[in-house]
Amino acid sequence: DKQELRRLRAWSDQQRRHHRHWVRCNTSVFFTQEKYDKLKDAGFQFSELSWDEQYKKLKAYKNTHTTLKVEKDHDEDLHKWVLKQRTALRRHFEGKPANLSEDRLNKLVDLGWQKGQDKTKGKCNVRDLANEEKRWNENYQQLIRYKEENGHMWFGRTYVKAEDAHLRGWVAMIRKEYQKLQNGEQSNLAAIQMKRLSDIGFDFNPRKLKNNTSNDKRWEVNFQLLKEYKERQGDFTLRKGEDRKMIRMIKRIRLDYKKKQRGDRSGLTDERIANLEEIGFDFQRKETPYKVRDVPRSWEERFQQLLQFKEEHGHCLVPQISGGILGEWVRRQRCQYKKLMASERTSLTHEKALRLSSIGFCFDASSRFKGTIRTIQK
Image (cartoon, rainbow, N blue to C red; front, side, top):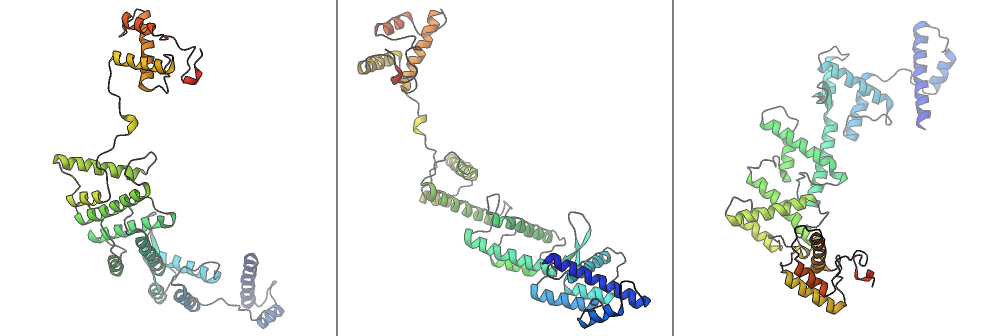
């Protein structure tokens, strides 16, 4: 039980304090010779481990766990000792007095602690090189796995899985440290790390638009996304609710194709156009059937269609919802008739109104027709 272990550790520290007072003053209210004998027979250690002994324990811990970060649950005494050494090191790096000899300072630095800079607070801190190297290797292995699964190491602004979200920040940090090296500034990116990243094809500067190689890599990634979209949807028709990035990509390709057809500057090369044609890409946006407008017809042609409707159904009550274009024309005739009766300007003449009346046209069908053929009241 952790709580019971804490109580036992606190009691042991208390016995050590009482023992020191008993030895120094030859008397103590809380400690006696009898208690001393019992604790000694039980193998109790009255004095805490020396600095060199704690250093050896930390060195052995590093060899086993490859880090200097000691968890409190693992060894609380060593954990407290490590915090004290880090505090003393930070004071030394800040130029303040620290309870560390030159020999102990060199030992701690050789073990893997170095001077660092806290970017958020702007203060000096202590870097754990061993722990940083361990985390770097873990991220490096995850980057290799990401490349094997996705075929690239370019994140951009695309969606990534939750388990790979931290890789985006780590990759951005690597490229930022690389830019520091290019600018002659101090960087935490080591030469061996750069070599390992270069061996797996890592791009240290993908955002440089003037670099044709970077553009080619970005095109390969986008082309692979287009192929996956075609396999998933069957065509390149833009659908409602589709990924915005994919919609922008398809629209941009079609726009670049139009520019190339006009002879303007375009990002599409002949090779890229050929690759798109191989996967069946539609460079021209297809018109949706329901958006194709009907050919305008004269009033006489619509009147003849109304006569055919009456012959088939026995009335002139064309549904306005399901009646199509003829239903819309019938609605307009009723509206124009109201204007005619109100002596307003209208395209319906008295002659046209008489012709409609002669075939039984109903100019006020609100009480007899509610929008569908099933609701006609005779």
